[in-house]
Image: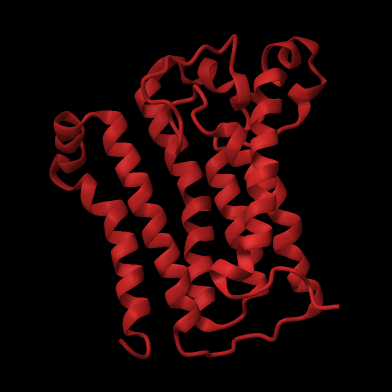
Length: 231
């Protein structure tokens, strides 16, 4: 495959993997046949593999410069990735079911919102941070399409998911939404919230730090580009 062919195929496969399962109730039928845990484990691995292929294909696509990379731009991913990874690790599986990575089987308790008090859409915010920082740092056409699409998708998904949540919850939507936030650090000042949540979040944050350091030091090996700004 030459030119833009591989990139177009990788992008089409990644997009199709996220939309085709929702057509005609295919996802629900596969969950019923395979089991929820197996389906989402397999789907997660497939999505990760397609994402790696898409990023690699973007690097092999013809280079069309849209803006030059300035030295300060290389710092943005390094500054954005730690909070993005922490948001993802601490927010994965939160009891707010109306978001990416939320536990659909969980019944949300407004009296114990957990990490949803900090963010009810942590994975979308993490994706937007990751994509936005890499968008600025990579000014060629292939990567602008790649990271711009991810950033736009994440930012547009937040109001779309909130609107769907309000329709699903119905009359008590305001009560359910009240203890949550798009992004807020105020719960960290609440002793009760800290007692209930910090032990678990501290363990998840430690895992996040390890993952971030691994991604930082394996970036050049896996992606082919050093994440560290040139001296």
